[in-house]
Amino acid sequence: MTVEHSRPLHRGRFAPSPTGPLHMGSLLAAMGSYLQARHSGGQWLVRVEDLDPPREVPGATTAILAGLEAHGFEWDGKVVYQSERGESYLAALDVLARQQFLFACRCSRRDLFKAGKAGKEGPIYPGTCRQAGLADAPGRALRFAPAPGILCFRDALQGKICEDVRRETGDFVVRRRDGLIAYQLAVVVDDAEQGINAVVRGCDLLRSTARQIRLQQALGLAQPEYMHLPLIMGRDRKKLSKQNGAEPLDDSQALANLYRAHHLLRQKPLDTGAVTTVREFWSLAIANWDPSPLIGLREIAAPAAARL
Image 1 (cartoon, rainbow, N blue to C red):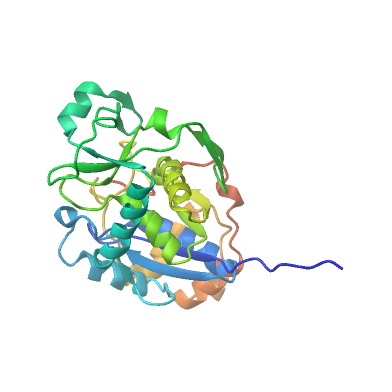
Image 2: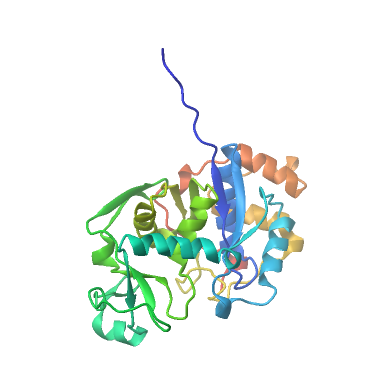
């Protein structure tokens, strides 16, 4: 007798940082993750990654959530705020410390630029404090020493990705010198506790994935499936982002914005005669979602209306 095992319910998420309102790049990421979740009959959650107060823009969280609602996104459950989840992050640090994955580091950015080898995301940490036996104290970061060796994972769009985290990135920060929890640890803990098993996000985070998998392994957490969407690039070849001055979305033009993002995701045109509302757009877009035209694509040109 053959026993059939049902596939776990797809649980995806969109996790914006409150550094400004939604723009076309963030709409693209939100749409891709939403379509993948809803087309799969799964759930879609929203998490606000508000762990870095110096970078936050007052009112941005409210504007982001209002923008999502204006564009017809409907999320499952309550919005989760990273700023309220400190205990979970400290518990994860405790687990890593007990397994001797962590060490205190006194190196400044200037020290790293002087001593570190240049990598794809800044200097590669040279291991300066790994064996120093420094006590954890104010003004010192905590770094995670990843397991050595090449780690490979398969991305739904970008194919097989391999990286030796220790060699290509080095020991990376999980708690900053100012005491704030670093993104890499927070996202791993949050995804696990929220039951996220399918991460759909932009290719700017593709380089973070191997580090996050190393953390998942050290913490004994399940590894989600990954799908990294292409980034919208401006005329200056920089990613369309809040930091690079991307224009905020006009919520009063929600349907037009959705059509533009849908086109950028290389989807077949919808029957405009059947779509007069945002709700009708989503009904057709979800039913016809096909990510295959995006396979191997990491960048797309910004439409004229969204150029920097």
